[in-house]
Image (cartoon, rainbow, N blue to C red; front, side, top):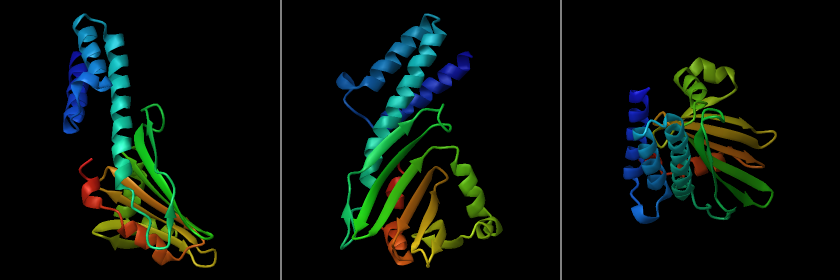
Length: 198
């Protein structure tokens, strides 16, 4: 138990220092400091609770920064406000999600980036097994050096693209009343190199 808390504390601290902020007004560092004091006094339940809370705060800060990675609207398109959501480990194992909707007349495309979620493993299985991806009606394609699964229905003019980046992020582009080229264009507008730094 002792080593579990020490490991969790080290992991949380490293997350904070990767994205430094002013300590005087940072609630993450304050919460971690409280957890350290509780741990030293033997209040393991309180320390665990505060570490969970600090982890959630870190996810929220990460989600706000990740919104900057959502692409700007392409020529002729309009974009709504970017949204973000940080889920605790109790919800599908946790994770961070950011998204944005783009419209052009009756056409709409949603771009979503999910980070650090266990659900990525199922998508990784598909990308690493071409037969499995094909069985689901998808086509494999490389987009800006990333493996992608494209599903598109030409009759309904709708489809989606799923891309797993660095084994930690899933990028999903869904569209209705669009051409497949529109979906691919938005997939290509994402800075995947910058994404891997989060």
